[in-house]
Length: 333
Image 1 (cartoon, rainbow, N blue to C red):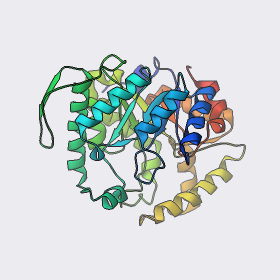
Image 2: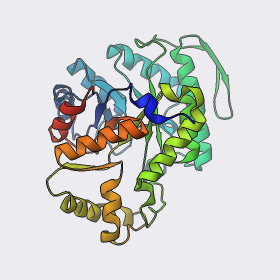
Image 3: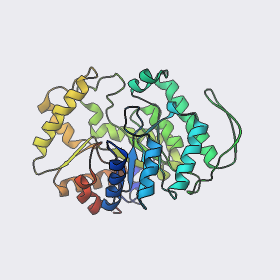
Image 4: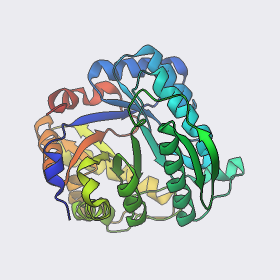
């Protein structure tokens, strides 16, 4: 199995932000602020209850910025046919001057399916569609005529246009926490975002919070390394932090987050369990960054140097200024 730290030592740290805005003007201003603060990426999610459509929203940000890269966190492959998706993505890469990164996922919010009348199939079928979508999009990014016959999609002699600015097409990012999707990502993705617990699929978070533990992330990186083989060194590993705060009282901040986490999990039929027992698990978790600027910086460096994570996305709802000190200190190191 490849050693994660071997690839990590040559890959500089960078940071992303998921935009949370109520309207277009606020979204554009958020993009400007993220660029000025030194964030590598700004991303939009892909849900029907979001204020703006992600690809159009990213183009608005692109028109108002020069350097910040544009990402999706993540596009639900069930909402767009892959041929249409590839065309729109290539166009956005061209219009943005080659700044696009494409986050793709298998879909997980059941409300998106129920409210739109789209069938919410089981995970293996959704992951299979995601794999076919990635293969088609990558083929069309090459601008060669694409012919593809799969279980879910058929493409016949379709040429990919326009040609992307980035050679080979925009980088593809896949996120997940299970062995099946991470192994698939290891074979197809340029960036893999390793996730902890997921609350939106109707399942419960494990009572002992095992999905937050450092050894769970070690196992996930192991799955990726095994499935990727020789291409592991070419894969960028990312973490999306579920909670982060710069503070001198880490324990108090963690207890406050546990209250929020417990309420969130209970809405989906799960439970977090005893707060005191779970506190240290939370503080040690790779997807939680609580402490002073020095403590958080040391933790993120350690995650990069030991497990290979160099790309950290701040919690949803964060403003650029919230973590600008971390971004300024660690970007490029």
